[in-house]
Length: 319
Image 1 (cartoon, rainbow, N blue to C red):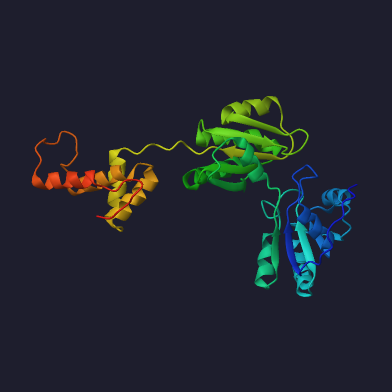
Image 2: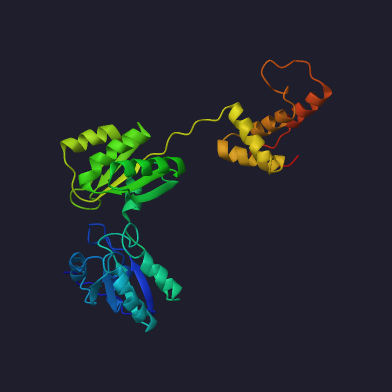
C-alpha cells in the first residue's frame, strides 16, 4: 500500500475527468491522486477494478459504478449532486475516460447544466501506442472499436480509407484480432501495421509488419489482453505536371494567382518557384511545354522572365 500523502487543498465544485494508469499502477499523476483523494465521490466504470488502484494509493473516497448500462438512471442523480456544489471524479478501468469508455453523455449534460468540468490528463492507450509504434505521428485518426461483424467492419475500414488523415488507430478485442488483420489486408493491402498489446504491463508486446504477416503470427500465438492496432498512412504519390496543372486550375477559380501558387506548393511539397512557372504556363499553353517552338515571341519572353523572377521559397510576393 502506498504511504504517499496527498494534497488536501480544497477542490472547486465540479466534474473531474481523471486519467488512470493503463496497467502500471505508478503511471498516475500527482494531481490525479490529489483529486481522487479530495473528491466527494468517485464514479468508476467497474468499482472492483478501480478498488485495487484506490487501495494501493490509500484513496478512501467513496465510489460508485457509472457505466453504459446504468448511465441513464445515474446521470440525474450525479447532476443533482453537482448542483449542490459537490466534487465528483470520473475514472475508467484504464486510461483516459471517454476514449472508447463511458462518460460522453455525462460530460455533455454537465456542461449543459453549466457545471464546471475539468480534465485531469494522463495515460491514454492510443497516444502511448503511437509514441512507440515508429509510424508517422504528425497526423492520426482514432476510430476506437470497429463493428464486430466482418461486412460492417470492412465497410468501416473502406470509409476510413477515404477520409482518414495520417496513421489510423483502432482498438480490438484479442479474440477478433486475426479477423481484423484479415480485413485490414483486404482493404489496405501491404500497408505497414503495428499491434501494441498489454501496454505498460508485464507482458507488453509491440509487433510491426504487414497485416498478413501479423495475422500469421497471431494465428500461431493466440493474443491476450488489451490491444491497439495502428495502420500506417499510404505513401503519398508525387504529383506530376498534369496533377499540378489541375490543382492550379481549381485553385485559381477562387484564389488570386499568388494565393493559388502558395496553396498548391503547400499541398504538393514542391517549391513556389516551380509552381509559379506552371501557373504562368497555364496562361500560355505553348510556354515551357514539351516540343514547344524554340523561337520566343515577345509575350513568351516576358512570361519566361516573370517565371525567372518568381518568388523564392523564402520571399513570397505577388504578381
